[in-house]
Length: 286
Ligand code: GUN
Image (cartoon, rainbow, N blue to C red):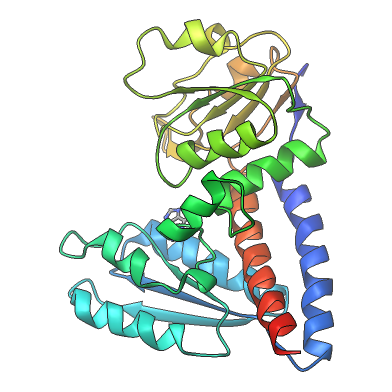
């Protein structure tokens, strides 16, 4: 393989070791970082994601609280749970797993989370701070991708980065974080005409559309760095990304696999944000 594998499992593990040490430092001062995760309904994939988040938070020594609510829960009941966590001093991070059932207004729920505990970085106050480059919680997936690039010594400054996808969770903030690191950023998406015209000019391609193997070697410049955020099933039911890995790996200078690329980083940065939240509270209480 020409392309070098970017190992998110290994990089994530290293960062979690660093987080664990800092958690131990806080605990030695009698202070334990706490993460609360709320899940609504019984979507299997969401439950798996949440279980992994919880397991990882315990592994780094954090307090972990899981709140399972039925799909029939009312918006008011959910908001009341969030309010309790907002006022719980043992909780430094609150995450409400998305998507939520249709009868619940997602925007209202996100707005209800105390911005200081918004470890997902979804609250408009934190989104705004990120946009203007003020320190805040960065959304976990784009933040994790920046760490993957940094820890593999991938230059960003002056490079042309093409982000495919424009979600509030990944695509939009991803472009901003790259821009802040002096990349030239192009946004593409599912409706972009002649996608390859843009992607073949890219030094860094970040794909977050949610369409199995939509990117192949015809989209990629020789030597580009390819980051795949997709998590899909192929025609055989096997996990795969938005990138056709086997067709792109020879052409790329570095590429993330699915699974084992971006996924482990998302969880890792959630823990990092929770740690930063707890450290900030601790520093203010001293
Ligand atoms: N659903 C899919 N990804 C995420 C995420 O990063 N955070 C939350 N809260 N829900 C999600």
